Length: 465
View (tube, rainbow, N blue to C red):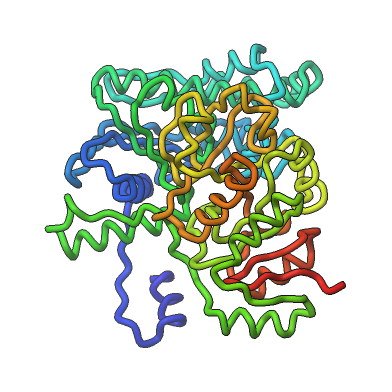
């Protein structure tokens, strides 16, 4: 009733009905109907949702069969962390609490812990305890939390001892590696009973690209992670459930577009109206704008690209992106310090022509959404250092012409100029702000950062003077 009342204020003339759907099922629908898979396992994995932190499904031709559910359990020594469900523990909530304890923002900066982990050694007693905190139930295909172990880990005296005994890097490594190990053990157990070659993933924890890489390397031939894997993606799942309720005959055929460019777009006239009052210098290049951007970044400049519909989900996929040359050894430090203003150890991710995949990576598939890391061949680490983390992994977006013609043309021109069809791609925003959505946001964040140029709907934009 409360929800319906609020919606009537926003939509006074609409015919409204409010329907509730189970949290993990909405994640699963989003993953399945975006994957393009017919017969697959679907694994949801997050902090908490309707009493569970994970569910497992087998889906064939649109029919969902729940195979297992892993329940949150109350842990008294975790109750103080209100951002982690006030004591209702899960693998994801443990990760978020350690994100907080390491000095970062929980439910936002877990990627920083993941990046920091590459500099540490996971072989310590925290890793052992975290792995022991989860046992597997083969009969129910579930992960069971050991509350005694978790209470011991989160006792204040133990936390004080851990942070006195181990470096932040080693603690991050223990948290990251234990998460990977728990998931690998669980999905390994699942696969023995259901030996499918495909799996689709959803839920906030599946934003962990190194965990996803290990699932791919160890267990499955094909892994799909829905681009909006967090709770923003629930809306996508609900849309699929409701659409198929109205059109059940489409259950086996319906799918979401492969590229999640679902957001707002703006006309040339709308953009120019904003630029006219911005105080910036600009000129219209039209279809030549991607080529100009390529030449600028090859020349050592850092810019931004704003084009078409905004991406849905946490990853910039070329339409709201900061772009730069991967050959510059100092480019990560430069962008982290001068533009994004975030920790210097954080890597940036590359967008790459799909035809470069086999040449540059040990083992990879055509992932278009930056939802998994792959291992770069060591021979290229000195040639494109900006594309790779210290552990030789890269969270890459493979770009085909059909996916995004303008972005593909930009990267193609970079290859013509450098021999590598690869550029740095990070979200277009000042650190602490959301990814830009509108032309006004783009101008604001361009002015508030040290970007050299911006390409926005065919306009080439720089600062005056």
